[in-house]
Image 1: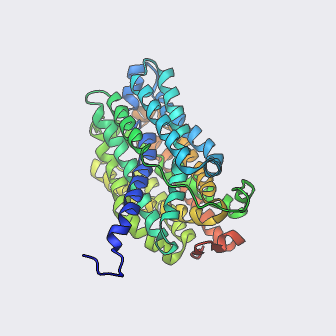
Image 2: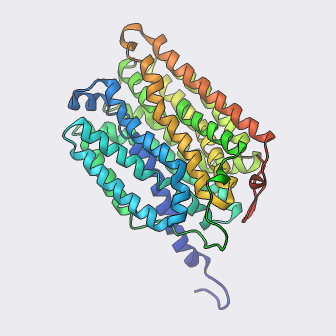
Image 3: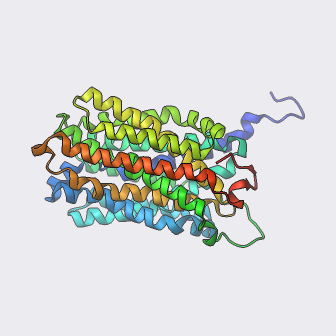
Length: 407
């Protein structure tokens, strides 16, 4: 029993905790729905009678509208209201997933993927903004670390669930996505605090620092996090892993991120988001380059898991920077940076698949070049993060809830 005059903190915090948990699950759904086709490419190719390159458009069709619309979705969502926007978006996502599950042709399937990506553009940034409003500034990095862990879980579980569903039908995976999305429509984030000032502005997002953060975000996906499709194909054709089991090869990447993301939040607080992003991108880029030189299943699992562990540090650092950079338009900043992050995932198949088709004839070097070049992209992104330490703006120095960590 709570003594008179004292507040039962656990009871008071329960509603907030439940809201955070719903937002975390929403954060998992985005990368889960986006990457669920990574282990399905051969099955999609066979069912729809298209080549592996054509099946790769299942990833691009999702990430292109997702990335493009996030240039404006966060700001528009803040203007329209977070609750209304995310509720409508989750319902649209569920309906699009049903379309994918029932698609009789590749055209219908790709249409569903486009709608999924477009709907997800109006959920992810508003979820991050909602989390930022729920916790004090001192806990923001840890909270974003947990959110990043959920996103890593989505990245990891997507190919696993997709690969397992191949044993019966890949379509069942999209039924699962539809059910989860419909449930999330019942638990949208709360609207931001009302203000008497002007509405969130797009102009506030056009700064040198935002440009560097966006470049680092792009590299984090084009060079590391957006490569499950390449690891999947490499595992199947070079290492002889079955399509059903390939999800387990990719599992370590997400598991490492899940385990370490909260810890990385504390690291980001101590060394700054820019340093955390730079270290994560450079080291994970090296791991990606090494992936193309693996010769056994054990080597591949170890290297890919290590890449996921350090990539998670970059993800937490980049999200930390984005959430604090423009306090007057928090969701807008998060959505623009996220647009560049996931545009990296959208173009990754277009960049690296052309280097892959002759793998079965030319052997490891062909795949090695794709992994090596992807690693270089990640390292360049790390350089952009380092450059943040020399570029300052007024928005980056303080937020309404307290000072930002050092860049």
